Image 1: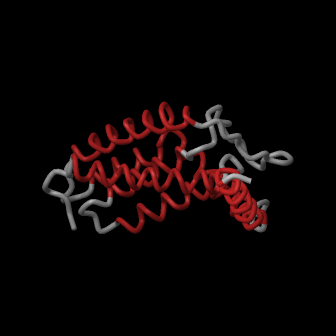
Image 2 (image 1 turned 120 degrees about the vertical axis):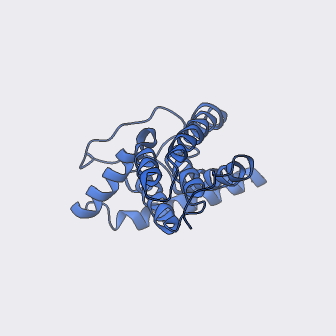
Amino acid sequence: MTVSSDFAALVARFDAAVDRRFDSVRGRPGVDRVMYAASELGDWSLIWHLVGTAQALRPGRRPESAARLAVVLGLESALVNGGVKSLFNRHRPVAEGVRPHRLRQPRTSSFPSGHASSGFTFAGVASEGDRLAPLYYGLAVIVAASRIHVKIHHASDVIAGAALGYGLSRLVRRAWPAAPGTDS
């Protein structure tokens, strides 16, 4: 075995172990509803645009922050979905049986998770100067985990997407800091 095949085997074992953990909660109606809804709301960053708009309308916030966030999420999507995913050709997990809820089936590479990337990009950018930062990161975790739950992504796809999104948010905060007038 080579180093790359050893690493690939390690990642496959990790993904399988995490998937087995999710198997213990898959099929529970309440959990399925939450996870499928989170996965759907993550499509096209809908949840992040909604939360970003609500954030911008709060007292003490600047409405321009929603436009900044929309631009950042657009750039993140172009980078991840149009660029990074094209470098990889990872197959998505195979879902056995019928899913309990409808779900859009992506056609792109499984690696990295765009839902996780956009969620952590949003959380990192939106949390700047906002006391609700833990809520934003919590939502990002739920949306990212939902992709494992619904068997659209492997756990390693989600971790890579989250790391990419978090790193991108750090770059954005340095290159394009939030305008003054945010609450703390």
